[in-house]
Image 1 (cartoon, rainbow, N blue to C red):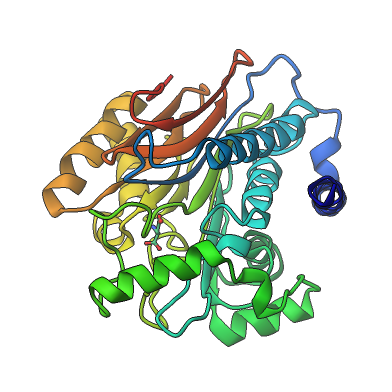
Image 2 (tube, rainbow, N blue to C red; image 1 turned 180 degrees about the vertical axis):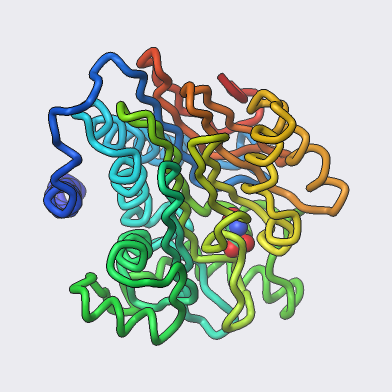
Length: 350
Ligand code: ASP
């Protein structure tokens, strides 16, 4: 009963947020789109040590349902002729509002017991981008990153300056309790028991995975990418990972591809993962899947980095690839087919 009411309340809020996104972007609903042009969207909810049997059936069902809700919300915008930027934001807002993923509401705890949120987005036509780092209390950091892109001359704002900017632009804040989930608190305690200084412990299940992201192609032929995260459990106060860094966790360029990453951020920053993949497509003329594979299973592994990416090229080809045991992921391809996968033995790319 309560769950039903919560779902209805959540659905109304998502509708409200999506309404606000579309109102702010009248071009989203314009009729000047080519309804025959392919549209596609792919999302992720983080990569890591996710093995069959690690998740109970109920949690797995909830994860799959939320992934599907997110990818469908973004796809609906694309079908109406909306922009890929609006589609990726809509998909990410749903994942940020879910307590299941390490972004927005379900963000991990830092070493001080707080939640510092990072997010970024980029569009591939004009290569405009927006990002926020280490913000607290912001319900949907991806919407704030978008505001930075549209309403400031900057690409990235951080900390208190970003929060002040958010208040000036009517971005929604939530009290600290909104972001406190028992599951994440237990993760913090477990990691501290093992090693008080550890933060990204990739060999232990679920300690760092589940950043969220989305990549889409719209009917106008434009790509966009978005990524949002709480970072790594027990991270040092002020630590910033790859997710808000354009070129590392997020990148979009219509001349090559769009990418959203998840994994051990320190490595993704040094390997400039998202940009490196797109550069290989653009300069080496590599097919997207090969470019992704070279970075995720080559460069990154050689450096010691763990994780994965979702990526798309201007033809709507989708790649979901990772060097970990699993990655929460879902896609609606150009032919309209839906896939929702968690484990490695699911569909890797299509
Ligand atoms: N890449 C994120 C970070 O390092 C973590 C993740 O993807 O789970 O902040």
